Image (spheres, one colour):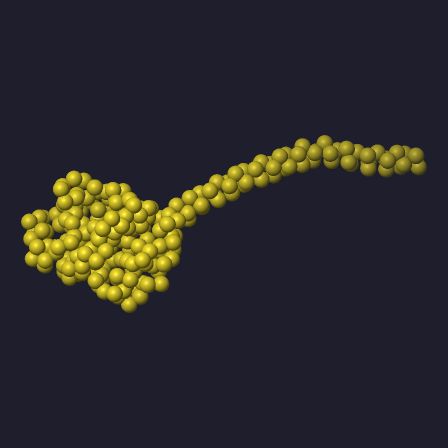
Length: 230
């Protein structure tokens, strides 16, 4: 009886002791790993929050403009895709009227309507007078239509065409190697010509359009007024 008592007394005693020895380090390890994961998650969550803020809040000024412009994308402006969360516009090089190389960053502080066009593009030719009228109506320190010609051959046709249609307000911007189109195409921003981008003073893309539009229409003018806070 004493032997049985002894065995019964020892067994429960050995069970917990053996269990502590076996599982104690494992439990401590789990706690350590859990704590490490919690810290790591907290760091990542913090970074994600910061990065998210950087991504979604990188263009606060343009985001406000986009919210004003979006309701006006109807009728003749229905093809303008306005970004819900504007991001920095894809940059590309082109030449100014004096032949000096420029980039979108050179227009920071000004709302710009960037338009890629070519003389062989029929819709481009059709909308060019309207872009010229839009520039005449709003062009100045706060806004500019930046129409970039991307002809790569028979370059004499470019300015001759503009003269023939009576362009008075647009400055002549060009990219005779069409690098701008290739860069934007790789970025998934353009599919053909014409292609137009509304870019805020902070250099962020507010909206883009693939195809021609009636830029001299009341809808277009109201949209630009909204973009300029008028």
